[in-house]
Each structure stands twice: as C-alpha cells, then as structure tokens.
Image: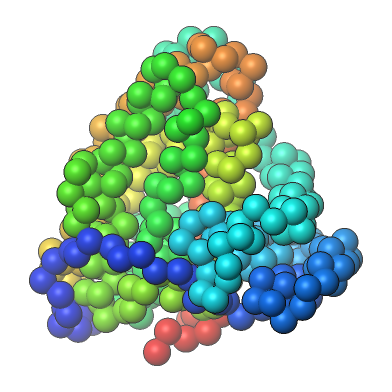
Length: 356
C-alpha cells in the first residue's frame, strides 16, 4: 500500500483573492494574446491573424487544441480573478472579445456537431426524468472507480491537479446564470449555489475545502498554479462552462450543464473519498469529497426538477438547450476520463509536465 504523506494543514481556511499567474503560451494565439494583455504590443492584428489561421488539434478537434484552450482560459480568467500583471480594463476590451467570440464559435460548433440530446418533454417532471435517464445511460469510463480501487498516490495528485483548474473557482461559471433567470428556476439555482459557497461560512466554500485537500497531499493550492501542467482536454471543460455562463443566449445550456453536473457528483465523490482513505489520507483531504456525497444527493433533485424542469416549463424554447447542456457536461467528463485512464493504463502521466 502506498503511504500517504503527512498533511500540512488541520482544516480548511477561507480563500484569498489571488489573480492567476500568467500561463505559458502554447502557440501563436496565446503568444499574441499575452503580448497584447501585458503591453508588449499595442497592435491586435497578430492576435486576430492567429485566430483566423488556427486549425483544429491533432484529433481534428478544438477540444484538444492546446493553443486555443489556453487562450480561452486567459480570456475567461479576465472575468474571474484576473491575470497577474494584466490591467482589469482588458476584461471588456473589444479586441479580446472579438477574438474570444471567434474561438467560442468554433468550440460551440464542434460540440453541436458531436453531442446530441433527447427532447426534454413539456413538464418539470418530464424534464427531470429525461435528465436522470440521460445521466444513467452515460457509459464513460470512471476515474472515481479507478481511484477507489487501484490508484496510486501520484495518480491522486494528478487527479487533484487536473481538477484544481475548475475546483478552485467552483460554482462561479454557473453563478453567471443567476441574473438571467427569474422565478422558481432562479430560486433553485441560488439555493444550490449558496451551499457551494459555504452557506454563510467562508471556510466551508467548496473551493476552500478543495484547497485544503490539495494542501493535505502536499500540493500548492495557489489559484491557477497548475494550469501549465494540464492538457487542453482538462482546460476545455471549465472553458465551456465559462462560455455557457457568459453568453446569455446559452442560458438554457448552462442550466442543463449544472443539472448534469450535480446529478453525476454524489457517487463519484463517495468513491474518491473511499480511495483517499484506502491510501491513508485523513479528513482534511477527504472532507471535500465527503461533503459532496450528501450535498449533491440533495442538489440533483433541486437541479433537475426545480431549476431545469421549471425553466423549461417557463420558457419552452430553452428546452433543447437545457438537454444539450446536460449532454455536453457528460461528454466532456467522458473525454477527459478517457484521456486520464489511457495514460495511467499505459504507465504514463496524464499531465503535460510533472508536478514534482
């Protein structure tokens, strides 16, 4: 049995405001973007030329396109905690927004082509039943089962590194939907998000609990610390969340995404917690995962019926996008899981560069 390293903390602490360190560019788009954002050039033409000239990645997909995904990560981070050394005025600068929109349209077009979803039905009960059936039919490989039964401590560290890209800002992309909803769906979303943000206790924010888990296995919990370590497919999911959350026309999809996210959380997190205990980790590491076992079992009901279902009842035209957003969530998780497990089964790292 692999022996766990001693924990470096006795519990969670409130998160501190911290801009993301500037990532390393992975191609022409990222290079041109960061030169613009940092003031190395005042000319946006190289950025727009790089965006126009980009072609899909090695599998003919924009989702594994390192240059595009790291550029989107930087662009979206302007709406989150910001980037080190980058003026906040860039958040809504037209040159960045034009480039971002072009990149988003490519990602969305691919997802529209690759991901299909069933019709939602007309009532909240119909929508919820279809969402639960869709989640139950998902046949993606399970990283959580691997971790529960066979994962080594280095693989646990890799998992936390992958997930830190989103989990250290957990819930934020979905919160952008709050002002775009009204009535029952809005109330349901706020109820879910209140728990995500600690229900009044900053130290109980799920992002803070995840940071404690990172510290407990000896990782650096600095916001954005490991962005350079993860592949494009890891960046793609939080980037798609941001795309759905920031574009009002996609509000149905971000609601569907959150519903699927909550509906597929409880069981995997129980398995993650069991795997961590198998490796000898204590409560400071497992608490994040244990918290989600109970919380998300409740959230999935609220998300499916009161949020997604009532939204479709209220605005039937959003129904197809609600279901598509849920299917996108499942698909992105599946593509990421296949990458991670294929690397581990080959005896290789699933990261771009080693953590230690």
